[in-house]
Amino acid sequence: TAAYSSSQQISDAWIESDFAADSGFTLEQAGDTIELSAINQTLLPGLSVVLANLSEGMAMVEKVNNDGSFSVWVQAESGDTIVVFTVEHGSSNGGGQPLTIEAP
Image (cartoon, rainbow, N blue to C red; front, side, top):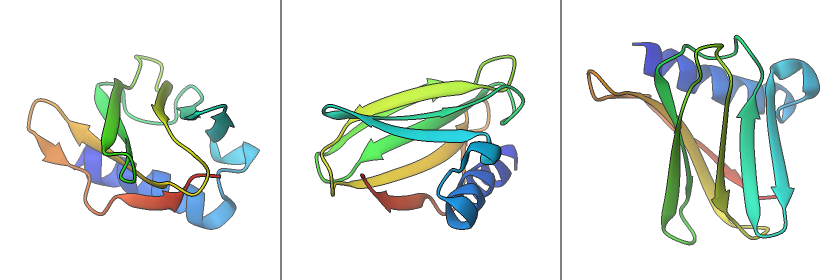
């Protein structure tokens, strides 16, 4: 499914480079929030990206824009457990194994 391949794309970008500039993804900590974003043509439009803080029990969801970019944030402190995955709304398909990382 599109959600599965997009979640895998996010995981691969983290595993290969910790979201280096050429990956298309950016993970930034600003105060008490963490933001994950992607440039144009990174993911399939219409999917949603879930960014969850398991340590705090909260999650935010943001739809991928028509140009394939997105930006989603969640409150997070350094060391919190963060998970990321994508979902397809129309079919309720989840994105397989989520990426699990520690907030910077």
